[in-house]
Image 1 (cartoon, rainbow, N blue to C red):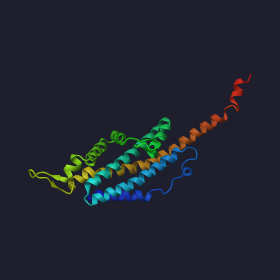
Image 2: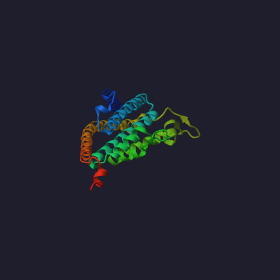
Image 3: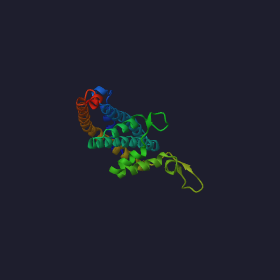
Image 4: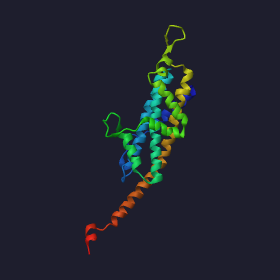
Length: 238
């Protein structure tokens, strides 16, 4: 597990070092807000991942596996959301329909469950199931972490209770270290590696998006140029 933790720590520091301090619309596109929203979301997710992953890393280091599992689950949800974003963008580039990406970006940036946001949130389980189509193991590991996150047998009795002595419950300090790597540190590492892959690939897709937006803008401008100066007079004119 030490080797896995070291790799996780290196990725966290790399993410932290490459994070942007500012994203401006002028630096993305003067034509559409979609590229601006896209890069903003990418950087916001990276900031969140650095914070949550570092907290999980520290819990694993100190043998506090239940809180580490809970944090790892949050990392997996964030990466799953980013994966869906990547898929939506790919679909836009393939179909030429930008609305689906824009709607998703608005949900991701401003959605909420309690009604305080301006749009409806995107469901976490739906995100994970999207990644599950690419990697069933990702989805299965997520559900395993859910069991430890909830206050049920895996989240309470298994890590903290020992009833091998008849008629007696001995309280323990938590999950055995043997379980920590397959259930926690390996999924955490896999999630960070997937995020890194998507983060890098998104740049190529982003450049393609800029080209797509520019083409749409050119078509719109061309259409406006060829419209009659006064369409109603043209139609009525005899």
